[in-house]
Amino acid sequence: MHGEAQAVAVLEKLAVNFHRREAKFVAGEEITGEVLIKVPKSLPVTAVSVKLLGAASVCWDECGVIYRDSECYVNVKITYYGDGRGHKSIIDQQSCITPGTHNLPFSFLLPEALPPSFSALYGAVRYSVQAKLKRPLSPVYVAGAPFLLTLLPLAPAAHARILVRGAGLEGEGGGAWLASGSVT
Image 1 (tube, one colour):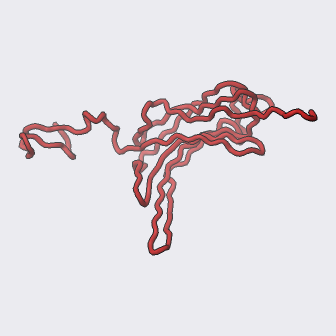
Image 2 (cartoon, one colour):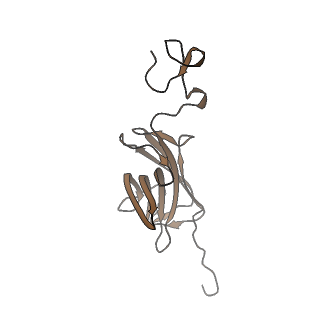
Image 3 (cartoon, helix red, strand yellow):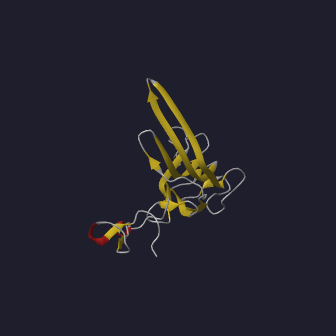
């Protein structure tokens, strides 16, 4: 092989795709999707996984002293290959991802007691699904997809508020915007 460059296997695409068009979920709901892996040639790997992550972080400065903290709410991993597991449809005998496009399904059940997504100047609560592909003696490939966790299912903007007419409620034109409570 003197004077010849050896072809290097390369990852063409690694992505996380949700089955839902909008990445908005509610605590207790199931998140489903696929990890997309596209390789033009066999690609040696040591691990392929996907992880559901959710955490809060805060950071602020008081008189030159920086304060930081973080808290993990959810960290759940699905291993497709590695740690003694093998996904036979995409990994060959030599521990290589076979050439082509591969869609690896995932499903996570969000815990019931998660706080909603939030972002502000001094802190945030963020959620994402992250795919990792580890190769021998190479950098780790990572792809992630953030999502919003809401308190209630989000309605289209046109239906976000309910105008209640009559029923003794105060407001302009004999109606009022219902901020809380129930309509019977």
